[in-house]
Image (cartoon, rainbow, N blue to C red):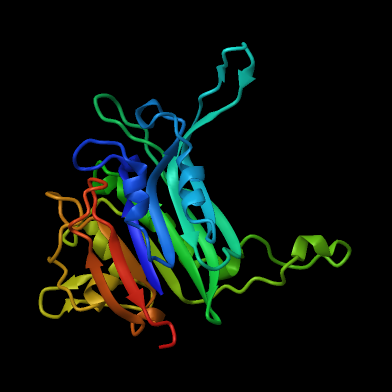
Length: 289
């Protein structure tokens, strides 16, 4: 499986030019595509429906979109007819295999005062089956202002991941009198987890340890079953290596459950890509391991 996580900055590149075709081209070859900052009906991006444009560029992929910023953008057309429209900004998952179950979680947030700007954040979850192996995919974009505002979001994500077996996915239980509710069969809640996103922290920030485990002065990173692992270091890179959003450091991650630690075969940043202020982060996994 080849996976890419990419904060596309709504198609605006390092050159300040909006070019969604350039963004889409940089995703070619991925089996699983995890995107952040996908939007629709904004003036700055020609009022494009980026969800439809991206999905249309990958007609054989299954997709889901989570609009974490969702505002009214309705208008009257030239014939004075009312057109309902939403101005949205959020995360998107595309997959070569079906997204069996999808949920969207609202993450905790704190209202801030000017001159700072803060927008609502969320977490996407999708269940897939890849060559007989069930995996839960998670996609997010954390608060960018400070660790104190990130901390409750990270706690909520970890709780959501760990509680999936007790909370269920899109549905649970049984409804013998109306089997339509259970079409497709009962849902599996696997241990295998992949969490991607623009986390807005570096390896030396508290959020990194919240996801991957504490750091010891004498023994280095302490991995535990209750934490996730950084696919970047699992593939052989050091924690302090790489810069996914110059000059801010490595902000973009693919965290994996310990059950997948032997499956990661390679990871890299596409540092020649100028389609966004971030670089796409690619990970290859051999899920037969």
